[in-house]
Amino acid sequence: MPRSLFWVRTDVAGADHALVDDRRGLAARGVALAVDPIPYSCRYELRTDENWSTVRLEVNCEGSGWLRTLRLERAAGRWRASTGEQGDLDAALTAAGKRPVGLPGTDEPERLADAVDVDLGGSPLFNTLPVHRLRLRDAVPGTKYPITTVWVLVPSLRVVPSEQVYTVLDGGNVGFASGDFTADLTLDADGYVLLYPGLAERTDRPA
Image 1: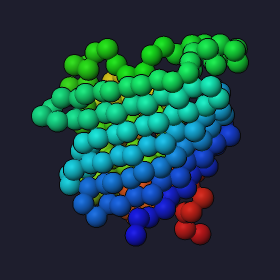
Image 2: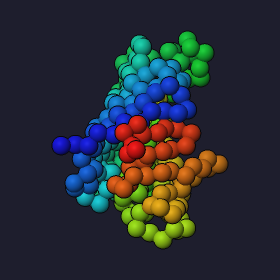
Image 3: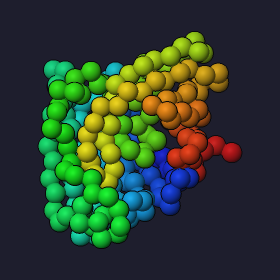
């Protein structure tokens, strides 16, 4: 049976529910909901290999009057992105007084060449990928691991490289940094996020 993980957003009204099977790498599917920048629902399916390196991510993001899709695949060290759009997200954003975000996907897939992990914006599940792949829970506290991730912005589904640093903390937890942003992530015994300050908190966390 897959394991059920449920996060409530703490930065905006929203939530994320994922079903995960981590017996051989990670197979996960989930849905994320939020109201910012406009209300949307985002369904995703993720597959890694046995070493927790991402193989495929499929995302379907939908709101009133628009739908965007993204399929990311990694093979032989190269990323390929396929996208689609129905309706007009930029028009919906403009009508709500928000800035347009442009087209989904990426025009420069070669900039993603160094990335092994994906990071879906606003979804704490994806922080677990480098935690397992790099075996951070077994590493010496204070050790830093700089990585490049494929960052998928939500709801635009724009794809960009993101430079991130994970730092091993006491108690099996990790510090996360990207640019000027930092957060200390509390993990459960299996490496899934319990608390991501400023973003989300698990509601199924042990008492």
